[in-house]
Length: 306
Image 1 (cartoon, rainbow, N blue to C red):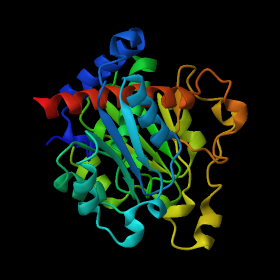
Image 2: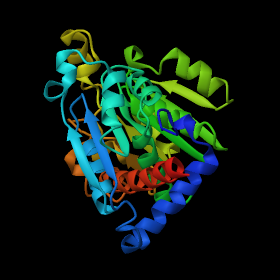
Image 3: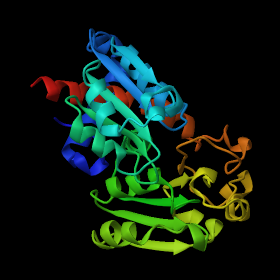
Image 4: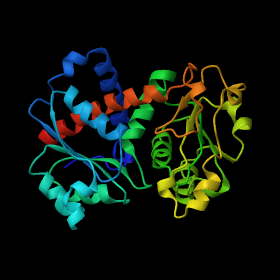
């Protein structure tokens, strides 16, 4: 049974095909309005979420399907000690496809290995977040018209940011990619991401602590939140949480067509004054996330029926 656990589960050809489907959904929404009629999506969220969970549910409804939902671990049998494997087997009896978020790395893979229906990883701990990456790719594609020959700056929490790790993995398979990794020393990209993805694929990269000096060369600036929930102690979080705050002044040397992305939620790392800047694309990402999840649901259900 085909699932999506890591963005590398799909080839670039498959991702490009989903981008094409997504663009067609935007152009012809009525064409897709009953494609999942009679199908049920189960959203299993054992970690807080607003955008991702509602995005999946909106995606399924707009395809004509239905949704059953678990919105927290406390409201599920996980609170009684039920294993992820057993939960996946049970939900397979109720639904046609699962979208799952879990605080533990690898939980989605365990679910996929035990479910008899497709499982979509909606974020597992600090590991990866492949459907956010699909939203990011569609946003870049719609704004820049390409996914190759771009310089991407990642700024903020690059250590725990699962959205960062997933997008780096995805971009590593396109040509002409250059990465600028902007973070405090304590929140640098993990060694395994650097070694196994960036260096292994020969991607030119720079690590720096200085956002403003990196700004002029960026086609994409991917801002991230310093995540309180990933820290083991409050002191480290408080010391690092305001490391990078993007203000209009810091965009003075940026390209006029640079795209500012952020997986959201935002705390204070992007000034609200930037929201009206034409380069601000983070709310476009939200819309694009719903569309790409529609394309993904269609792909996985079609393959499950084949």
